[in-house]
Length: 381
View 1 (tube, helix red, strand yellow):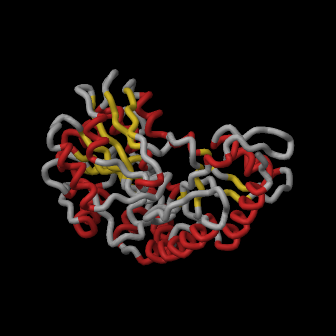
View 2 (tube, one colour):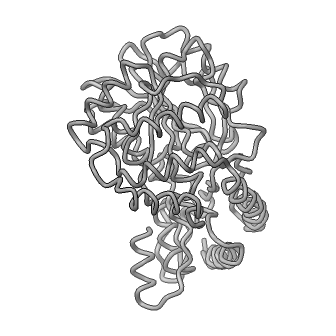
View 3 (spheres, one colour):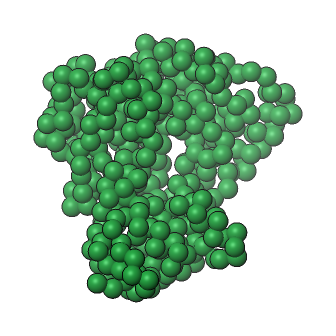
């Protein structure tokens, strides 16, 4: 959708993109200054495969101070973005035929990473009425003797759902019965949440050794292009990820790593400023979505996405008689008719929805939602 939107924009059409999953803010100046300093100090050679010791220690400090989690630098592996971190974990854990439980909706690459490892994805469906969160009963029903891994994100992309401590504790009770299942917790949106505080499933001692945290700098510090992510895991898994990465990409960009040290060292002032803007935009988009007949939405607790239910428009026709059959058709219609880029929910495992990112200016969001409402109003039965 982003590609199609750019193609329309290249023809002079004013397209508003709500399809891209990245903050619309610039990287903080102190982080950029650290990168410039790293260049001046000639940090331009190969970096250690698992990351500079100073960065791994900064991550250890962050996990302790912000999350109350105790790790050692040997349990941290820095990678070229959280996406590589996820892929490394799956490739080191999953053998052909192993099953990976994934709640839907899920970030589009989860299932494809499982395919690369020759595993099998087992999906647990959720919907808007449960705020897109699974129950312990659903989790237990999905477990088989071949289950090797459970992977999820909180805050979630694409729904913005956030698991509370009590909700995580209920899932942990299930995992305690199955000591051979690992838990991959994608926490990349940790700092963009609107609840009391981020809760990690790694806080529960009974499953701690089986939890692999994936996090990074892209969302919190608007560093998407810097490609800087990491895992925190038990020493055996960390060592396996180190070994795999040593035979693929080797160490992450030296300049990005030095910038990451400063990002974690200097605190969350810029992060909190960005979060305040997202909080305001969330309410703006929520109110505008609720004003569109046929659209059903909840109020996400984190990230910067809405995942509204739009199946009431399936079966309707545009002005040319084309029938809207699914979420992809609707997203394409909104792009061509309203010049707003969104993403169909089928990409995330739930076809009755579309994803909208509110990582855009207030003015752009108001205009985008106006266009969406107008375009949907033109569809006929």
